[in-house]
Length: 307
Image (cartoon, rainbow, N blue to C red; front, side):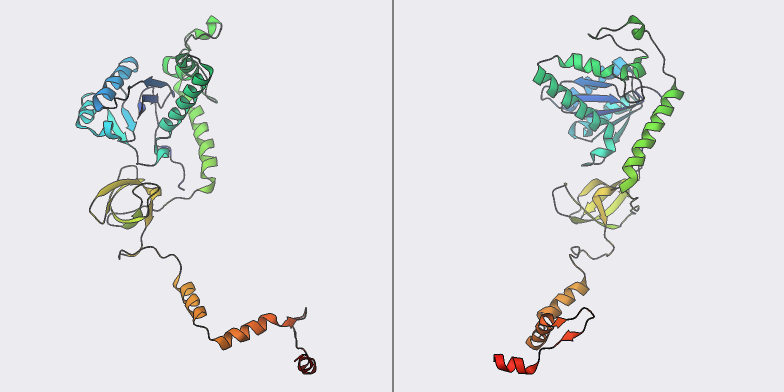
């Protein structure tokens, strides 16, 4: 496991936005403000683009959008949309949800929220509104950070609490820095840095988390230094995080050894041991020794009488 790396540094709301498709779940990195749009089983690029345009029209166009690189985000339509709206599209490594932790956290929150609303037969939109009004650890609420005010919900509250109150970026930055330091401190206790891979390095990788290790060659190291493009023996290229790659130090394509040669040699020697040696070893194991280590030998007379 590799140490934590904070790659997103936001300076204003909607600067960085992540997006996940099942329903469109969009979350602002600055405020953790979550937006939801129902796709009705229509996860085409055009439908996703329409919902994203609606969200961006309400909150402004972000500088960057982070996604998992699913089919709706890989189409020519979506690339054209990113270009026309002047948005940088950042794709995270496949099968590595930690690289887009904010999106995964938002998905977990929304799933838990919808599950509880279904159990209690309550309105999920009220629950979403209350989430947006709830402070996070030592930070103000998402609504307070994004809109500089709390939103009115069905919980009785003084109108003074609804008055606009600007959160200065200095206070926000100090709080976020403290949170990140605490998270990094505990996360990095059982981690270590992984060595960088270079072009044409031989590695082992997995097509998916449940498949076997396969051989590949590193073709490109991407900008964040933790995501690589590798090519397998059939010439097919894959993008994988460094944590899913194992360095192969020999140039010949052989399976990784399951045990060392010395242990294998010992096993072969054990199999080829003569019966005489086996008898002597069994006699040694059956002999009695004193506490000081001296071997106790029975007298010959007693043995003869027994025979």
